[in-house]
Image (cartoon, rainbow, N blue to C red; front, top):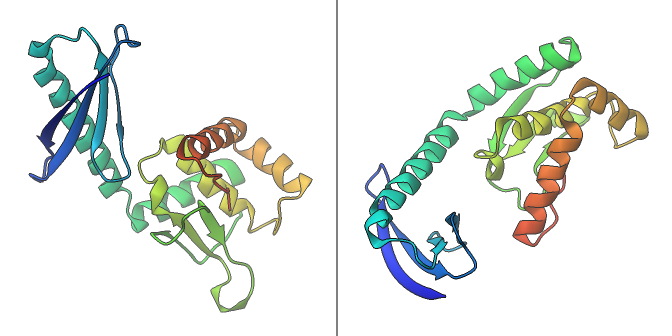
Length: 189
């Protein structure tokens, strides 16, 4: 692979490094991913035309800006509203909790729900999943809401969750795939 260093600027004017690799295995499509150090790895077909590179980088910048906007719109208040909607839609509005909020200190767990004590009913969702698809975030919320009824992952927990939230298995597959891609298992809670 032939490698080249480039840079783009996000909506806030921040410079993002891009490592461009021309890949003989790619024929038509380009692929990009964010690396742990914050730079982007952009793989393009070996014969990708130089004059099309600017347009491709603009598209990537647009996608990054969209993801940032989506992440910014996912606030604690929006999370609370989303949980209330999921509760009404999938659980007939019967589940109760005290608070739900995004947190930055979860490394392997995606969420947690406390039971008992002075923190009873506090749901915490990892901010790592803010830019995941909405239906997966909804699953994580539904999963934690179900813990208000079932404290553990019993068969009745999974039966009721799968019945209430039809995308349960699909979302779990997405989560396992993300964990595999990251090289670490991700836990529902």
